[in-house]
Image 1 (tube, helix red, strand yellow):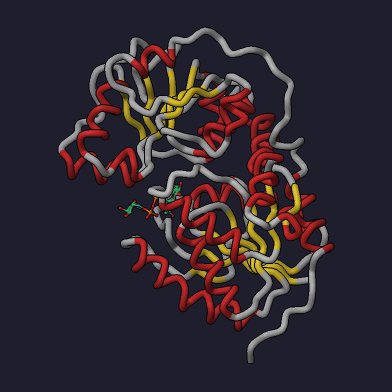
Image 2 (cartoon, helix red, strand yellow; image 1 turned 90 degrees about the horizontal axis):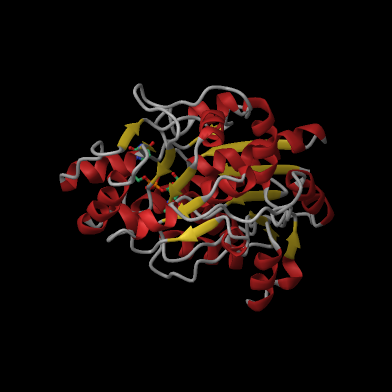
Length: 360
Ligand code: UD1
């Protein structure tokens, strides 16, 4: 069997890491294609180095652009790569423009397509990730779901027969890295002392509207304890464009860090404020209370179990009220699996493989 993975953005490198290890352990041929959606070393290379991911076999160097421009630039090049490689599976990850481009490229040339992290929904049609994941699920021959809730959603959309519950591959990575970084010092700017929170904000819904961005930043700046904000390039660019100063009050800024440093620093923090999907889940797995600045979440289990609170509108003390809440209830629930999702992904790929019929 030959698997062709398509990745391009930061969270996809994290998801790829355990899959690459599991495929390698079974001696399965694996071709890694990097679209180049994320190109800064801090968003890309560092993940390959620190998580031990093999270097990409193909790099498309597509870079940034509008949705259509970026996705379109990937589409044609991916078609050429897939036809050249002729894999048994094209494996796509999550919900970025790289995911959608590979889904469309694969389905058009009848390449068998598997979507990892299938079945997640925000039901918010204004999010680019929501279109990407819905379209990718419906293009896929195999939907690899991280949770029971995702399986239920796939069944609702008529995709039950092609869906398999494998668990969450990000949980596999987290469990490995957590043990490795326990006891390491936090990566925080000089002058910040415990107790502190960490924060990340990067979603278009939060960064692109100047009034909303200003409201979020002001709310973080007025929290009583220091907050260390790891600044994603989108946030850096939009804040500069809209004239929003990030570092003021109790808000301290830092450049993005690699995965082990982020997890190591989260372990020292009293709470996390974010709009990232992955970090909400990591907070839960590390049992650090999380506050999510969004109207909804795809990872509903984190909210149901009391470890995550949604704050759609952080103004007028609402962020402060959320981060000051009392400690969440102890739980030993494992809604995201037990760290063997990559193994189960490979099992599912092997079980469902069928010889591709190439158009030419
Ligand atoms: C993308 C994904 C999002 C994911 C996030 C993780 C889509 C639609 N969105 O969002 O789901 O959660 O990655 O980070 O695919 N930029 C740089 N350097 C880089 C990459 C981007 O400066 O290496 C800047 C550019 O100004 C670019 C902007 O960030 O226009 C947005 O980058 P893009 O990849 O389009 O989306 P993200 O916001 O990173």
